[in-house]
Length: 113
Image 1 (tube, rainbow, N blue to C red):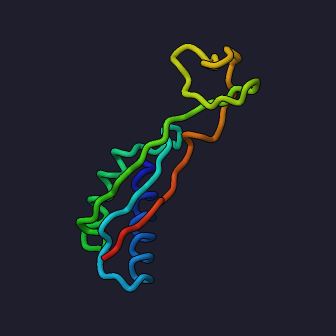
Image 2 (image 1 turned 30 degrees about the horizontal axis):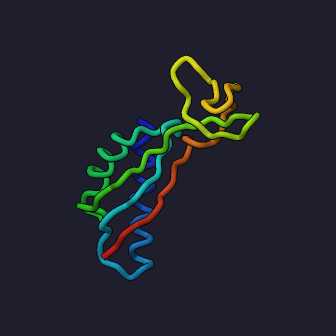
């Protein structure tokens, strides 16, 4: 349920951006959400439709680009998605280490009219 307050913030930021740009309506909000960010994209989408009612964001699209987590091989530097039950690098076999890839959460762009 922590998606509700973050979605409220997204709507407020989109409205502010729209007003500052001299526009009358938000057409789309484009988010980047990592699978390990702790946010559920489907919940954000659902809350956006509810929270945006009566605002400049009402009827706007919310587009979410999901980022899959990757780990990095300390030996060869390869970035790769972990296979189930394995951390082995597909290039050299060394166990990979965690990275920040997949933890992203940000507004990429806001489209206004």
